[in-house]
Length: 113
Length: 414
Image (tube, rainbow over all chains, first blue to last red):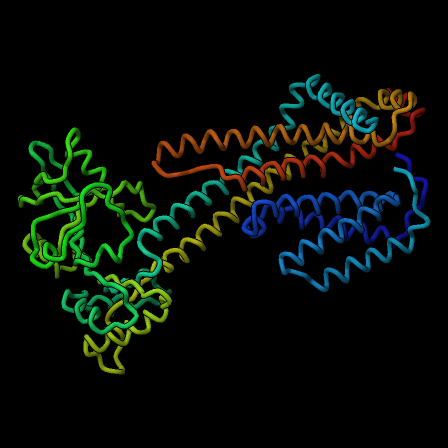
């Protein structure tokens, strides 16, 4: 596998934290509490978890599409949380910190897939 | 159009690869099948039980308060010896409730016993007989399919008339209309004036299908309605706009005054409502759901690892083919989608098989236990969601790795 661009330590930490979040979020896709919210909520939440996972892999490999996908996923996730009236300011703060950090290194990232 | 063509081609590559390694494909998707089966079967059973419970609770009446001797739920330090000496609700207490309770729309006295019902040579033992006062039809939710309910005169004078359940009617009168016929209840002749509409099995028991309903004033000649064995109770339905809590508050004061209880003494009656049953069952279903979620979650996790493993093997096996494809101009996303589709297909087939097994089981279970067990739309969506999600998550890393291979090095590999 090609890994021409050196990954900054901050990005590595962000990605590891992101992967941990994915591990903990994954079971909640099919948790009874999400299921009770409605028929399509597990599918929506699953889409967000899968997109987040792919975006972190992209960022891990220093790819710009990873950051772009992260931004899309961030808005999707927050919109869903607003609809569910379960908005967490701590969660938003973390996501924004991750996003700003990724954007800081955006120019050093690869344009290709 | 080119993108669609490429996608179609990558899907066909994926399918060919899966068909080419049948045993490997079968073993890999088995993990997902078991995982999806475990999760969806638990959710299906829990959902069906909840649905049946709600139906049963609704038939009891969710705006009805039951005045009884014993409470339906007990705390951890339950002083059962105090409850032993309580009196059972009495018929005269019903009249006082009907007279004085402002929040009550209707109220009825009910006592139940087990009896033998006979018609000519047919005899059914251990049938539940409900002995009820006239407003019972206003308190309990039921429908009469054939015939009618008691008139006020029949109830007041205690005429020997009965409304019987659908199952009972079919068993005693297989080829004739039961209306107007006389059955023997504990040896006494009772005329059938109505048949209840079929209700089906109730999760709480006590379905009207196998019951006989007679006026309480007639039942006095058959059984001792004051006996504790008959579980005498007063059912009170709240007026529209009056909550059960308001009705309970009013009934508490009223029952205390009827029984002339000292202000310092405890209540010697229990006011039960159906929400008590729902709450108890909700917590039970919650625990069962979580257990199923954990067990199914682990099965799916193992299935996901299996798919990821098989995808890594698949990439390794086809490394030189990937190299040739890339050297002939295949784009990275083509290679990526090829392997990703393979993983998603594998997982999706496993999920579909799991859902099919659940569907077949629901048909078998539903028929054998006589309860409505069905695979709901939400559970089907959940099954597909988990399958696709597992496919994407476990297949993306190997697929991305394959897409990033250097063509020259890939062709050289064995």
